[in-house]
Image (cartoon, rainbow, N blue to C red):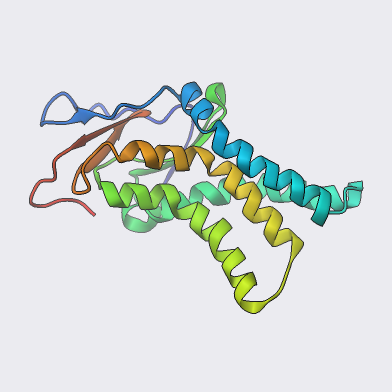
Length: 194
């Protein structure tokens, strides 16, 4: 795994104009964040509700939330990387922060099946938002910090959710690949990647 400050890297060895690759219709990073805004607003309303109903709003109650926020983003991106081929342990897995666009990302510099690409995108939402709440419900317990973590992570995953919807432009059996920020796809070859 590599770490990068700046945009997702372009791979000079990958020429998407050759080999039948088709560019996914996707917005630039700022517009993508704007498209994710309705999802973020919905989750933000839940977060505000949780903050006013479940959390002690005195400084001693807010400090743990700030700690959760600081730890959440790196863990969220690492979960993305763990779903990459090689579980994020190859040089093709890149975790980064793009300060100019205010975007954290986990980037895989190789081909993925469309379904694997979707799994990479929704992994942190499932692991850090859905599963903890389901476990709480099954055990019939209620921990405020779990609800706050789940909601804050849902807010962080709003761009991932929007990106999943964009991937539906490609057929289920497509092979996907990023070149820098943008995504390309082509019909699956017989030796389709996983």
